[in-house]
Length: 316
Length: 303
Image (cartoon, rainbow over all chains, first blue to last red; front, side, top):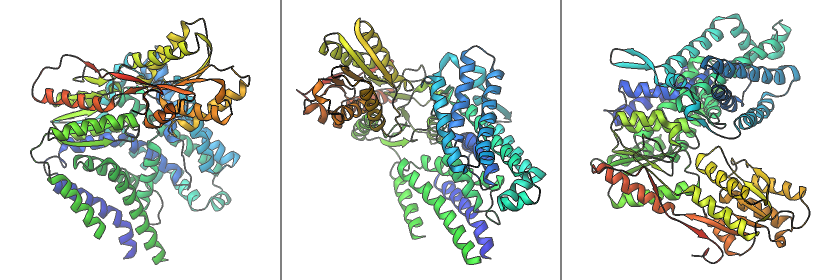
């Protein structure tokens, strides 16, 4: 019973939040347009959080995702500025993400630095590189091709509704992450590493290699989110992704309160992302002070995790 | 549970009050900056006289979130939106507002065809005033340290003007063009950078002046110079914005000699007037509205 309550508490909270906003904002909250807006607003966070789940499954962390997002945006924008086609810029941005992720994985699994420390270091390195490459400037205007920024404005029309490309991209990434973690040997092994690294190693799982791959996937996701961000704001700035990291970790933590053994799951991470996004959207519409909003979001994350950990303790 | 109920009740109370008044959303990622804060306070004061309901939204540095909040405000069907952020970066949101027929006014933002108008100070003129002040004070000769921040367009243009003015004096050498880390507010890192520059130039008189594109680096440089015991060398420091801390430092008649006071309050009030005009259907012709600035020195810092 307690187990069920613990698992469904966060989901119940989410439903209550939805009901509260639906009652308070009957004309504007549960409209197709607003829900699409929310999905679009959340798309970048969803991509970072879903790929962050991959490393968090192994009890690892990646604090560098925000600065990686900024760096990939800058790299792509610099390549656009140099006159190369859009696909070259996008590929380069994503490649930077994979390489940065691999470097994180190398530090964590080969050199053996704690993920917190290793990725804190690379957070600064990636951020510094973004500043160095861009000379600290925001790249915008004619330097950003309209076919790139146009992606963030485009969508697939279904009847009267236009599903934004950013939302579709995020949906695809979430689906791929879900498949990888839930339906492949690779994913199951990552969960095994998260359960017990030593035992996994002894059982013949190639821990070092898998961690390398997992970190590079997180790096790739961060870079992808950075490109989506740059397309949405039609510019690249060396600090623009920095807000993504803490929200992504908060979303994964919120999601972890819903799973049976407290392990991260992509679908639950998505619920975590939705909670954060819906709170932001609803409270903006209710005109709640932005600082009060920040406090409330923090308190809700704390409340969810506290309920989960208290009920877990009682259970044991 | 009690707290939850209380929060819910306060949210109800908060939203119940505004059935008929004009609703204006003010959205910025930079509310922590004193200048933005003062401009928005000026706007709020003027708006409350006009009987508007104003919702100030701070996205705490997140520019994409500004677009999200613009979209939310459109959903909420506000009467007007005011932004204090580079409009080029929130273009998608501005386009959505235009499509929805909601006017957007820039508050110290930047010019953009999708804005009704931008209300600001003349950044070129401010930078020209302080850099010429330094050039004259050091009689056109000596080494100058510059603190700039090119990532933020309104501050970037100040650096460009100072570059041009110092470049026009053959005997002025720009010793270093420093971009401080602003994540700590800008004072601490500027101080560290200035300490390093002072250490690299130990000869008295080897640094003639410090030109800062805003006040925080000027204050950091002042602390470094005083900490190194070199306040007596006559190094001239100037800033821009004349925030209260800078005014106090200037009033002491030490190395920090001048800054430029932007009239942020008036900027906010002028933006409110533009919003009022647009809502009443008046055509807004000027795309940029400059609010006058004033040089602050030891003579008038206390005023």
